Length: 247
Image 1 (spheres, rainbow, N blue to C red):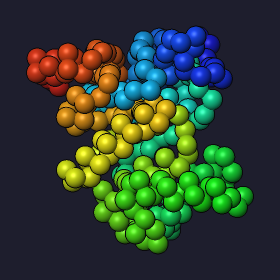
Image 2: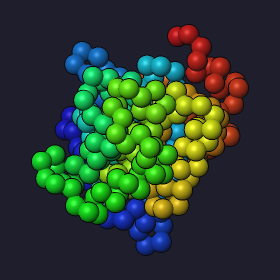
Image 3: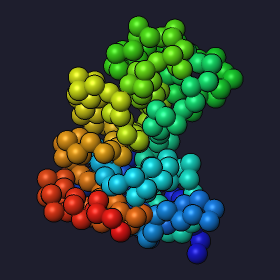
C-alpha cells in the first residue's frame, strides 16, 4: 500500500468551518519487526487540547512521532492542515544527561527549524527564546547544564524549546512527568493560553486530571483506537478499568 504523508498549506479554518488540524485514516506504524499502531482512524481538533491516554505500550509515543514526522507510517494516510512543522517535545528521559548543553542553548535549538544549526540567531530569534524561557519560569537556569537539572526542570527546558519553534502544532510526550503540583498547574495554564494564541496541542499523558481537562481525548490500547471524544464521557471508571486490564 502506498504511504501518504500530505501537508495541506492552508489555515485550519476554511469557509468559517474549523477543520481538523490532523487527520489519519487506516494509519499503521511501528519499527522493524515490531508493529505498534494498527489501522487508526481519528482526527485531532484544531485549536484545542487533545489528550492521548492509554497504558504503557499502547502506542501514544509512536503516534506523536508519526504526527511529528519522525516516524513514517507503514500504511494508511496522515493529513496535516497547517503551514508549520510540528514542534515535538519528547519525555525528559529521552534526552541524554551527557549532552554538554546549557538550558539556553537547549531552548535556542528550537529556532533551528527556521535558521538551521549553523546560522547565527537573529535578534528576533533571541527575543523568542527569552519569551519561551520566561513563560516556563526557567530564565534563572539559563547558564545551567541540562544534565545538572532535576527531571522537572529539564522537562520545562524541553517545553520551552518546543515553544521557541513557534509552531501551530505542539506535540508533548508526558509533559508533566516529574513536576510538582504547582508546576503541573503552570503547564496546564500555559497550554490553555497557547490554544487561545492559535496553537493546537496534543499531549500523551498518564495524568487523568490533565486528560479530563482536555478538550478531546483519544484512548489507545495495544496500538488500537479504543475510543475518541469528550474526556468526561470517555474516561469513565468502567472504560478505564477495561483499558488497563491485562490482555
